[in-house]
Figure 1 (cartoon, rainbow over the protein chains, first blue to last red):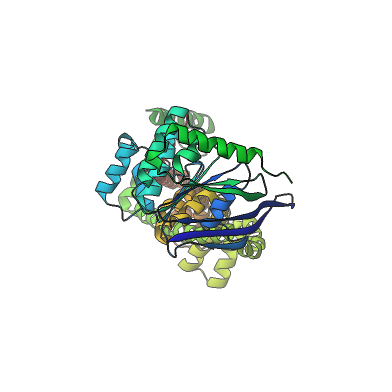
Figure 2 (figure 1 turned 120 degrees about the vertical axis):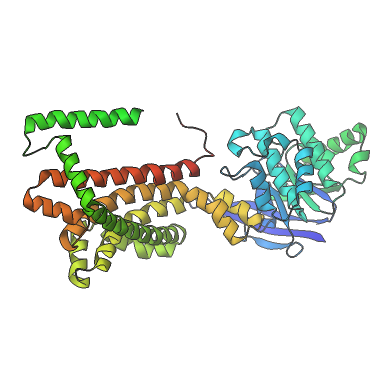
Length: 238
Length: 245
């Protein structure tokens, strides 16, 4: 099982009718069990890339090959829950086949047990993001896509959620793709960090991290981070 | 409690007004109540109310079902909107009387003609409201449903229908009041029974207690349906919303 992405170009027409180049060449491949992280400046086309490879935007030049009929779990930047359905119903609707024991385990890990019957409007943003994570994991996806799942959360909560994501991803043979602009998150979660240039997006570097997630020490993390920062700073400007 | 009070105020104002206007123009509440009881005893009241209610139910259901389907289509499919729009504007602005008279001329003084005429009057407002609802559907939730491969039925029931519910409620609310208003005209013009027919008879005989007896019974039925059917539906479909002040 393998995800191969080759987006040669993607243009976007604004409401005023002007054409904007969003992507100018993004290509990478991920194997099952691998966590790829797209890192790039804000507005560089990361979310657009995700939408294309989830099949939500067919209007681009290039090719995306993902396992046919692959179940997709998508955590959008905003939680995108159905406000008129309870937390549990939101998860069950996406994953009608998930059994009770699996769901309880998931709610337990994400600390959502007390909120099963709440409506999304009654949750904080942090809780709503966790429901979105629960929904994506409940479908037991073959392709898991996370679009800045930790943005706008306080550091303590973000680092806890990051550990939870790592725990959920480990031990599943799933292709995971995470988008973030936080280098720390990228290095702690990823097996492969793909650096993107400012808009229109190109791949600046494709850096594999060989040490398993759990074995990465702080020294090594700092070293990889400084390597990434160096690459970003030396990005060839057009 | 507040409702009871407001009803008492209504009766009081009516009673006082009848003292000034005189029995001939505005009979006091007891006279109307007596007429109402007499009509109820003879069974006429229920027969005519029943006939009117049956017409309202049929015409309302027909117009809501057709209107929702057409409105949804016009809100989602551009071509349908372009094709349907001139018809819609025509229907919206066609006076109810024209539709009713033409229906009776073309289809005869029949039940089908009456119900069709009432439904056609209500149809365009249902279409307009549901079209707005379909246009306002959240694309973000649509994408979510696509990514998670929600089956058609589940997508309709859990993603689309709840978004349309306020629009359906608005269409039902305004449509029901329109139907109540038009059904009596249709009955007056071409049916041998129903509240509209009885009011026509009372008008010709200048029997004001009878006229008011039917009008108020009719109003009572409308209020009952509003409280027992329309409002609970609205409350249920918006139970997830934080309480408005």
